[in-house]
Image (cartoon, rainbow, N blue to C red; front, side, top):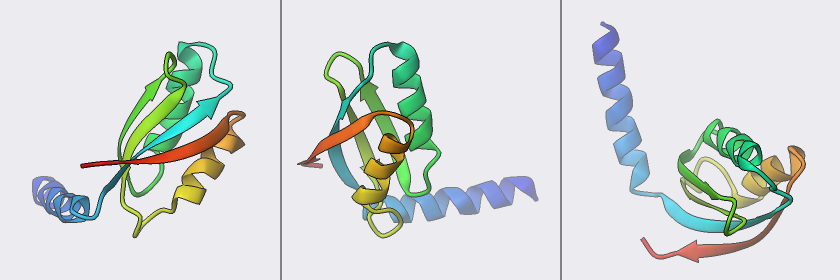
Length: 94
C-alpha cells in the first residue's frame, strides 16, 4: 500500500512541474557553508519549491517553484525570516 501512495505522489509532482518557474534570487548575508545549508533547507521545506541550489560564491539561490502554490514574495520572506536579505529576482529561461 505504501508503494501505491508514493507512486501517486510522484505522478502528482510530475504534473505540477509543468507549471514550474525557474528564478535566481540574490541573497546577502551568507558567509559560510552553514549559511548555505540553512538557506537550502529553509527553501527546500517550503511547499511548492521543487529544486534549490544555493551558491555562497555567487551569493544567490537558483530554484524551481510552482507559482500556483507559493509566491515569490513568500519565498523572499522565508529567506529574510532566517536572517538573510533576499534581493533581486531574475527569471531564468527553462
